[in-house]
Length: 403
Image (cartoon, rainbow, N blue to C red; front, side, top):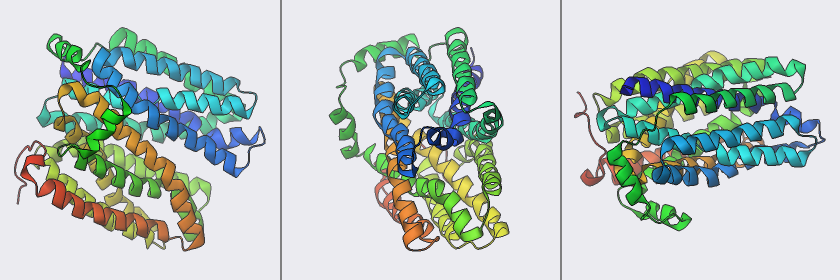
């Protein structure tokens, strides 16, 4: 298969994976309430998924370095099938929590998909390929929640059964259509990867390495700022703009559409003309300004304008950070490091809801956005000092920025 066909194949796999996930996502609070769950318990149900990904993502990524991308994708997708079936058949909160725990651990396979992209692209086209993963995410989140809402009229178990069916189809797709991305030469390197320690300490030690450490720190603080926006936006829309859930959903769909366009079409063109370290710096500055603009917004028309640079900068940063990480380590560590990156992002989604909602309710609806903007301002300074101004850490350039 050509690289283009391989890219389309993994795009389809990720899209169906995310579609199954997002079909049931907006219905979880209602599902939990049928078993008598209060708001705190429902919050724990959401948090346990992110916490499980925190554990599962680096493990799946590192295992894919050792045994190949395809078999680990199949194992993780199979785990998701069982997770969704358990959710559909749940008769109490315990089974509901166990289903989200299983899906969280096995659903951390985004690092494996990113490693697959890294295998089948050269450094010049890496960001463009990884942008397709982001576009698949965006499409899944645009279509899935609406489909889940429609299916829920036949009961909350129905979307879960549909998610299990979609995931089973995805497993067949990988088994019958997706070839292993590791070439014979790279399989030799995979065998050598068995010499790399497979421990949490070995992965966390990466934070201290000069080449990869600054990128992982950037992932954490950008992820925290962006997760504050994502997890408090609905409350902000309610408190500040007095929007109902339907209109809030429309705006989030609009943001998702902008993200799909950015990651699917814009990022590849930008990385063809600008160095990735330069894009990281500029994207971070734009994100800081856009988050401040979001915090100070008092009308829907202004909000729709502010969402454009916010979504574009978010799409650029998500893609370029992953691309830079894949280039900063040997091939035998790509899956593990992308898994650690995904785990760090999951950690931010555990922290952000508590911090954001506390600031919004106790200080002002603008407070979460102001904090997120300040974090991104600090990230811009960090990137300038640790990445952009350090020639040995500069990510593989396509060219000098055009002026």
